[in-house]
Image 1 (spheres, rainbow, N blue to C red):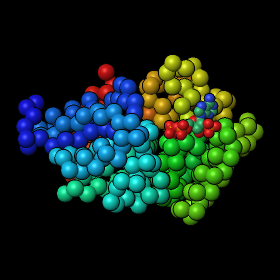
Image 2 (cartoon, helix red, strand yellow):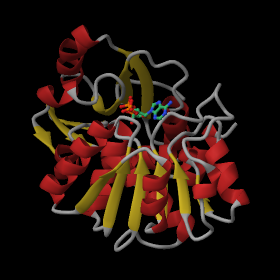
Image 3 (cartoon, protein in one colour):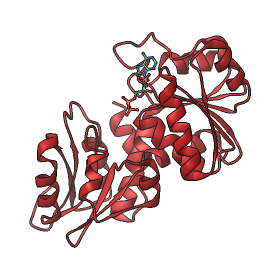
Image 4 (tube, protein in one colour):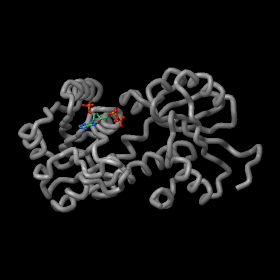
Length: 282
Ligand code: ATR
């Protein structure tokens, strides 16, 4: 593409960015729709975040994504924060408009869209078992609570973090969320009451591709099993789930859908999600 003074900029702020898939995903989408926009990776150290963000507000940026370690810190420098992002307590997408900045969080909605597309059902009224209590768990669990999932079980290796997240969910959304001890019998009882199981921990991520966050005996065919890990695309957990007859949802779809949500917030145009998925599936 030809870059000119009219070209609008988008980007990703994080540190380190490693082999982020977002630039290829968004640039493929812009090119396919003939949009005069480019998406660039910008590595920013925490101590430089404010300077960089204030500068971007004065440049020809239309928006940007924010990733580790800036998702919470960025909130200090925004003029406005969307209700979902406020509830989650983290921002991954920012819109720049006439020098002002508004923050959103598309991680949870990205998950939800993947779930709905893969299963053809809504999360409303479902019981959900979530493994992990970190940033990804927070975004997904808060979104599910706001979308009226029936009951949300939070299970984490460090039990206190599960208790604290469950309390936050209940306080902020009025949902019914409970912490579950990371022990076989406790997990078994909670999972037996659930329609959906989601792994938000890093267990199973490359190079530890043979690890699963869960004993496969805990999986029953009526469960929909979702994994936020996308490298490898088919994790040990998802392989086990398939073998046990469960419906599965891949992490790569969640990644694409959080990107597609951000794309739609920035452009107001429906994102070419299939093409974006293809671009990062190579
Ligand atoms: P993210 O922002 O990707 O969610 P995070 O905030 O660092 O990352 O959270 C990582 C999650 O994976 C946590 O819930 C962590 O459990 P602890 O709170 O006990 O640390 C979980 N996790 C990481 N490695 C794990 C392992 N080997 N077994 C079980 N849980 C693990």
